[in-house]
Structures are given as structure tokens and as C-alpha cells.
Length: 109
Length: 112
Image (cartoon, rainbow over all chains, first blue to last red; front, side):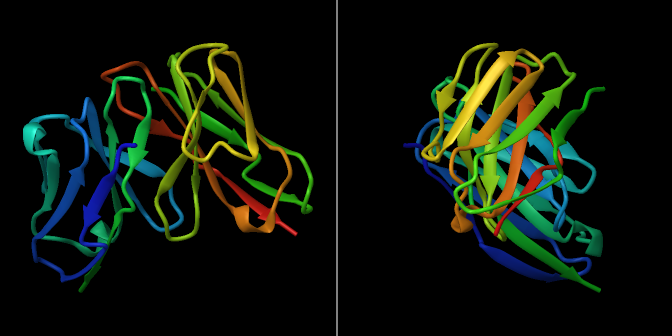
């Protein structure tokens, strides 16, 4: 079945540093989303981005479809960015969204 | 905007008990999902439903049943609760092939 690998598994940053989170997948993605989850909190969609580059605030998502990879760039990290970031893929058009294991980010002041 | 409501927020059951989790959405979305999230882990798909009365098995469907009797609701039944399936169960919905997934706040299951 569809495999989604996220790296790194965890990351610790000093406030102000940048972060690059990676998502690699085994089949061409029809749909791709990045989510954020605060510890114990609800999942929040950051980007729906099956191809190309999207920006919002300090966040940038870039998906290269034919290379089966996506990245999430966080610039000038803040302590409030701490939490887990998930990548989710739907590969075959059958609405079966599969999640990666996540990247746990901790930003310290 | 819409909302996804999951009930109950906390569910405590005995080992071997049959337990039902409920999810309601007012987005008028066609597709709904049930995921399980173990502590500190990612999400695993249990069941999904593309439209009313449709059911599709995910990667973790064994030990669970689901029901989509109307467009706005999707129920998940744990057929025989086990201690190793204590987790948060998350319901999600989307409006079709090019739509964002929206999530409820989850039901936390404890098995005694």
C-alpha cells in the first residue's frame, strides 16, 4: 500500500532558527496535505498542496509531484510553533488518505 | 464555517465490551473518515465512507465496524474492546476529491 515517510522524526530549534520538514511517498499523490497538531490538540490543516509551492505567513510548502516528495519550511521559528507536523497523502483517487508518522518540533526560547 | 462534533469526548469501557463512537458534521461533506491515534504516534485509517451508505475498510479495520446511515453522521463501533487499543479516535470529513480534510477534537478511549 501507500507509504509515507517523514523526516526528521523530531527536531529541536532555538527560537529564530529555520526548519525544513520532509515528506516522501511511494506513489504519485493525487492529494497532499500538511497538518499541525499541538500536544493534546486538534489537527489543523496548514496546506493543501498536491503540487507546486504555497506560502502562508512564515510557512512554505513545496511539493515536487514527479519526485514524490514535499517539504514544509518554517522560517524564524517561534515557541508557539512547537508541536507535531503531519503529512497526509491520497494516491489513487479513492479518497484513502494515509498519514506519515509526523515530525515533532520543539522550539526553545 | 462548519464543525465536526464527536461524542463522547471520553469513553471508558471494560475489556470485551462493545462500544460506539459517534461523529456528526455540518459541512455537508460527502466523505467521512475514522482514524486512530496512539499516544505519540501518527494516524491510522480505520474506515472511511465516500458517500451515504458507503463503507470502505482502511488499514486497521479488524475489530471495528462502521455505519454511515446519513450524510451528516458516521459511527464507529469497537466490537470487543481490548486494553491495547486505548487511543484517541479522530473523525474527519472532506467535500470531495480536491478538498481539505477537517477533523473533530477526538474521543479518548480507555479500556479497564
